[in-house]
Image (cartoon, rainbow, N blue to C red):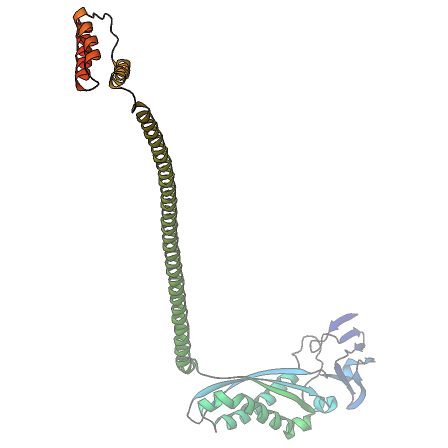
Length: 363
């Protein structure tokens, strides 16, 4: 016994025995078993025995199929563009498909079935034909701007209404136009203005950023300068205030000194007035005393006054160690006192006596 996996669908299994084989289908493969031209088995997920010598098996996929396609077209202004599209389809009538296209299960060693290639060729040629007709009516700029949406609509309608696809049992689920691109050198030429514009925008943005940076630096410098000016102004105000304070302190000190001087002068004036008052009072008292004394001495004779004067004068004379009084001096003085009236002669004799006393004291 040999077992093989069918190349068209990995899920289908065929087990070969002598003169007979067993088929086990997949959940996405629709199998059609023909024996002597008659359909013996068909459907999805079939399992049956068959004789390979008199049987033909075809397995048509019933899941959605994706067909990418790429082709070229010429625009109205003679520019070559490449069109990339993707077509989604499925087989809605597997029996008709198996009768129109080759989806047969080949024995081991035989070539693969060509059904998928046939479908790709049919759909690719239809897409290219309708796309060329559509692109031929537009310029390159229009094709690059609007061809994607236009081609999607045109190809979808054309493929879904194609009689050959409908009769074959192929349903078009959708068409996606992925890109419409010119030749590489034309594309680069078209990109150059936009690239230069973008570069110019980038340069402008760089310049604007630099200008903003310079403006910010200028603002920062101005703020720093304003701060320095403000600090200098405040320092100037501080110095002026300190000077004013010092000046006010000096003025207050001078005023206090002046007040002290005025007070001292007033005190001295008061003291001087008091002292003058005292002196005046003392003078008045002394004058009164002298007046009283003179009044007392007014009735005293001259000899008595002379004696008193001599006594007063002797109090202020220096000490006399020896006093010699001669008889002549004493007798003359006594005679004068007795004979002369109180007046100038007695005073003259008293003066001579005093002078003689002084001279003897000197001896």
